[in-house]
Length: 116
Image 1 (tube, rainbow, N blue to C red):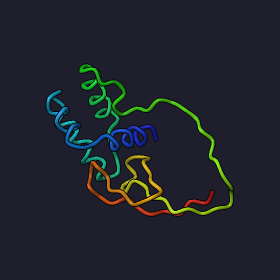
Image 2: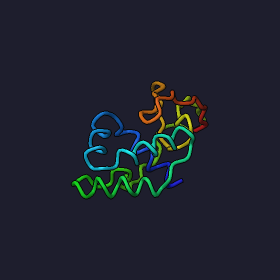
Image 3: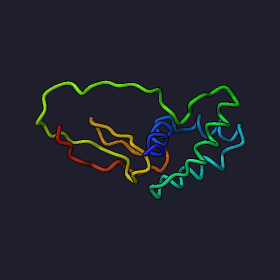
Image 4: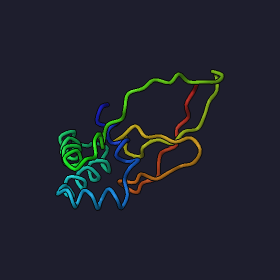
């Protein structure tokens, strides 16, 4: 599960800037492996560590890690909502309003129903 939350954090930051910095920091190949792993639903934590280390050496801490926090769910229970989740189960990223695409793989998110 830890790798999934780390891929989620990375996925939310994916784009041209991440790709350019990975190249500049010498880990473009690692980012490519992570994207390929995400396409197959499994990402190496070793590769995530390599990305974190390379970015940290250049002043960007916690690239694939989130600050810890807790926020209880608000609102009524007994409600079913439609959610969209990572298309390959490589991360824990989700959305409620509209179906996004994975920034790493380009695949559209899967639709699920969640009982609250």
